[in-house]
Image (tube, rainbow, N blue to C red; front, top):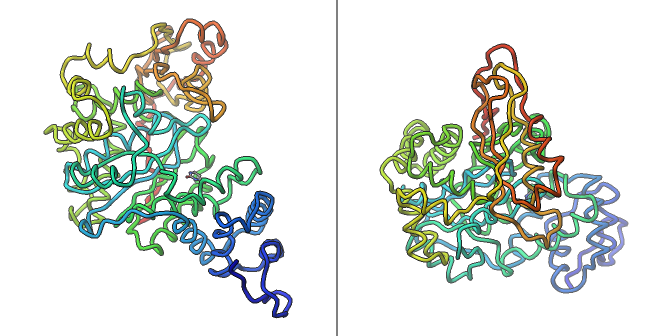
Length: 461
Ligand code: URA
């Protein structure tokens, strides 16, 4: 076991794991070696679950300094294997979102960036609470494999340029261990632990640039813009210290992103954007172009954000992002026939692959006016409870459940006019009639005109 000289009580005795916990409990700063000792202890057997729970609570209560967060992030990153891209230096990018309702940005973004000749090794997550997960959404495409070996990741990035996959067992085991204990010890919502968890995963990808999307609002982790600003400032600082050119967006998450919430339905919407179909969501398009454009600027492939945004938009207009998406999903296990049908103009074929549940419930407006907001927390909860998300980690997801929004914030609406369609199954509809009633109350209407939604609150660059 690695041991340290005890600087707490002035003795020459080595610090034990309980000493390290006591040091943090009493408000002292742990140095890099001490943090490394604790994280190494997770795999060598020196640290038990009870030690982890106590240390996490000490960190939760005392907080961590900038140096401590950086050391914790690096120790977690180094707890397993790391990806390496020396041949693509200057072109390796990714983005990470803290999670929201209807947040499908990564799905068109990764292929669009690859179409701009960047490399995007995107390690994504599953749904957490009511927020959907990119991997769950992609698994609604029959055959899509999220679990790739390190060799498959290298092959995918080398030949296609982008891949969206899950954290393998060999990458960052410390985060998996700590996260599982945080989940059951009331220590998830702590900035030091969130920053180290997110950035230890991102720094494994050997990135040159990273865009972070920190969301705030009723359906986000952070409820207020102020809370999100504090988290974003930490993420920005530590990410830059780790050598990634970083830009942090703070974005509104009271209203769902785009026109759809669910799994298969969000893949449909992502494909519609990549086809640049008339009527695709401009809300989604703007966020994807903004974040993709910013990455192009960070790695000097675009001179200005305006140029970067246009380069991303062009990949949708000229079909190159759609072609990358086609190649990406084939590379991750989808058959050539299904991939070809998904990118074809045959809507019936697309809808038959990305099936939606067959019972449709229309939500109607209860008054005339202008849409002020659409409660994303309520809509996310309805989709989750009807089977589109998980309540326990072992739950199986029903990809066919979803909500299609017919209207956006700012639109005019009349009494009894439909504004959303809920796709549900017979049995779920019977089990949860309350959720169907809830849908009608998720719409807030103003009697005076409402301006378009401003998603971006602040940018740290
Ligand atoms: N996402 C993560 O990966 N980790 C956290 O701690 C919170 C959100």
